[in-house]
Image (cartoon, rainbow, N blue to C red; front, side, top):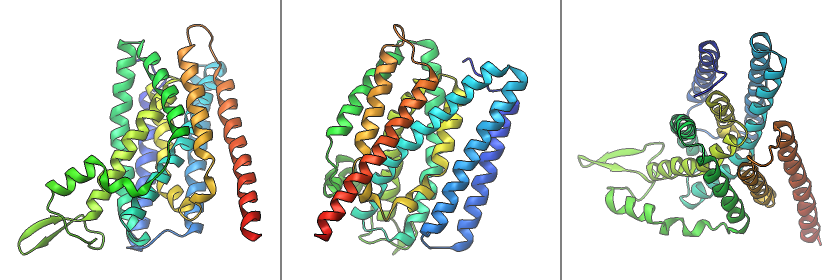
Length: 321
């Protein structure tokens, strides 16, 4: 696999991730069972985004010194584009988590532990998926066309799909888990397992954790091929992906109270996926530069937010009338 990642870059990335995760988990552990406030979530979101941009700046500087300005500009733009795509798609993942917590009536104060394990699990699973995907692409380059067609289909499906949390309990996986696990009827504090009368019982919180991890795998199937449309370098794909999901927990608590204000977001994300899918399908006939891709993705997100603000304004006017 061709990559700009050197042992120094891989080591630096690993050190940053481990240190920041340790700080984040240590601070949350000291606070005990609680819900992150909007102010704390906003502060941590700023920290994660700033750290990602600082890493990209350091990455650009390193490549400038070792590979030259042209290579550094291209690879730094690839990181930024991949990061923006993943961050945008992660918002939809957050909305799915909100539906899961709402359906299973998980109190806000108990959501912290599920999200901690959810993010840690996502880091492991995505790392495996990215390296596997990079290896497969080097062996079978035609897979990029498969990814492109899949993203095109997913984008259209996302725009047409209807969200309905009432059907979660009827999903085959949920029914299977409930029928094969000895499970309590109620949530038992932050415990995933409890012992009663000498028998070990799973709690509904374990079921929620499994569904959270599964939802991330499903979204990774969309987001990872989307970044492969920008670059197939495993170092850039992995770092941009992981930096985007490291701040997911803070993003969740930041958006938890205002999710209904983003009703138009899924349409913007669907357009992004369709654009990326087309980009991958026409790559042999017309190459879209990374800078153009970044501009298109950023422009779609800005237009989506403006449209969303207008829709919210109109709804507020109707509610006041």
